Length: 168
Image (cartoon, rainbow, N blue to C red; front, side, top):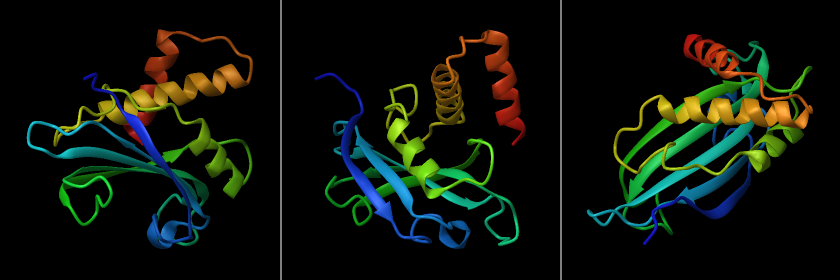
């Protein structure tokens, strides 16, 4: 059987605070992906959420931006990952969105336009590293360029984006 991420279900809008805690100020939009069971009979699940939130989740006066939250879970039952969790980890990322104050619609659109994950994003093991976010950062930057009818810039531009990502 081919090992690839399959979108299990869109998670739909989650009320403010349910995903991003106190820093979340809009609904969260999410998508769930899964891999086939591994040799230990565990199902790798990746939940990806987008929402408008405070850049510093602990400060309600910090600037707003679109936030991405990715939860990696190994579970025994895909129908109930949280209750059958064997291992999980979470990654938060502040995204650069359109100019101006980010909106609920920006988060919804970014979720809908998110490229499906590949095995380079996470293989389903307990460690995944920064490579996950680095690949997503480049894919989204290139998608933004394409939407603006700009050409792919260069490998040097990709490296600049990654350096910028690494410092944030």
